Length: 237
Length: 99
Image: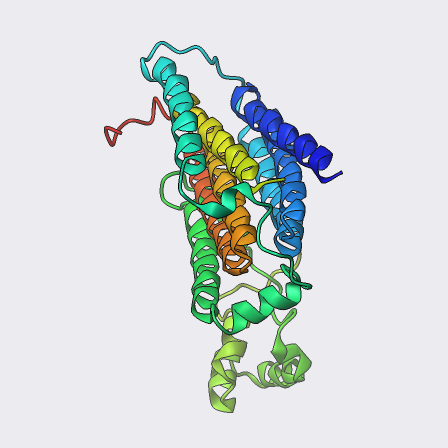
């Protein structure tokens, strides 16, 4: 049974990998990679790595591939012609063939005794989230923290890289909408605090709103929220 | 199945990924092929973890997945930035760094 499963998922994984490389449309490549990842998760299950298999399906085939699909849909990478003229395109597959043969020779010809066995005797609970989590929070705590820091750096880096740069092509429409004047005292803390009525009373008494605010010592946040110079204008958003 | 079979599959997938990195021109597909290579390494790590009966290899595989996710995020961000500047999405034409 395990042999049938192994060959099914191994052939599926290799076929899907070939599909990733050979398909012309990047969208189909992404879909092939999803199939490849799921086949690989089956192989992980056969190797008793339950948690890694689950993470593979959920994080990789789920989240990362969705990111890929979004970017392919956004960029809309068209079909590319596979047969370019450069020498690398001819040497590349030959190199890959040589690499595969060499890797197989190195790994199978190594003196590792465990390669021709089914592996170490199975301990109950091997590869479960309980064991992996314990390792992550005791022995491998430092790599765990470094990995989380790396994720944070990558998230910030992606935002910085992909954000809309200002200065090259000024987007006047966006600027106008961001700085659109808003009716005074809408959606601010000042309104909730009942200051509007006081200001209206002060205006009726002949003082300008700015002076009133300075006199009453309203904090800076309220001033920022209701711009001083903004003209009294209805119809903003 | 013996561990050697898994290692063979891992080697073949790695070679396929390397061939894709060398031959394709679309950076999106190059990133996909990098994923293939990382996954081949993951498979080898998990197979060795099974061989030794320790879970350190699986922990390493999870860390590799984190690194792959970071690489994908930054790489896709760069592709989106290239697209925004109306540059061709083709690694042969983006050769100003003489790469």
